Image (cartoon, rainbow, N blue to C red; front, side, top):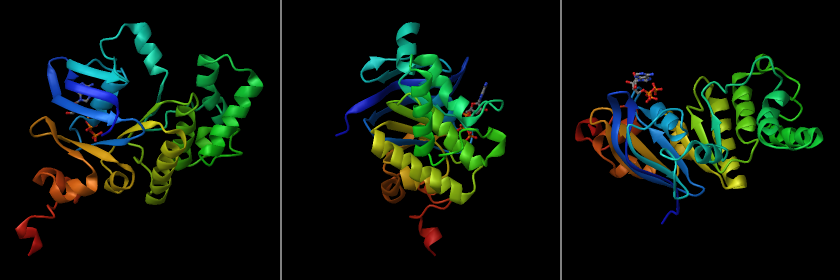
Length: 256
Ligand SMILES: Nc1ncnc2c1ncn2[C@@H]1O[C@H](COP(=O)(O)OP(=O)(O)OP(=O)(O)O)[C@@H](O)[C@H]1O
């Protein structure tokens, strides 16, 4: 049994009167890597934004460590937000700041650490993502894969308990993408953080996910949840087809 760090109950997400997904129910255990997957436009990013408080749920609840998040008073919500690290799609680094300044930003804003402690922590985080010695570079001076890793260094600056990734492989070549996957696994193993990743990159899903949830855009709800390798064998036809690049591995026709 997983001990639930995140509990989502009867959640509907969307925009004003338009529900993108309904009746979402799942738990993410402590230290688990949980992937949100599904076709383009099914609502993966909307779910992520709702889980980190960037948009309101239409109904239902999201709890972290047993504490309700989406209906919590603002001060409690901010407290919970401090235990999250988020890596947005583009890395979202400030272009006019060096990597060092970017990573120091949350430390300066949320801690009272001295400048020398901040410098030491920044160097540690840069080393963790394989960017030792790049602190004085600007985002425009490094590759896309390096920018993602720098974004990750900033996301882990405050030692978050939960890490959220929005399409981490987007725009990366296969080698950089694989390297980032390895880094995500390494990060989870060394920090014990719980990780939620939104992606439709199959290679990443099979490499990193302990479990994955499939958001189905026809029925507008989740239709499968489990380990991706098991879902490929015994999930419903839609999730098997999704996980096998559009061909159901179990259909008789495709076996001929
Ligand atoms: N600001 C918005 N206002 C209204 N509808 C929106 C808004 N943003 C997204 N949508 C709609 O919500 C649905 C879900 O979008 P979302 O970006 O969450 O999907 P996704 O699964 O993350 O897609 P992708 O894999 O292409 O990034 C889509 O139909 C989209 O058109």
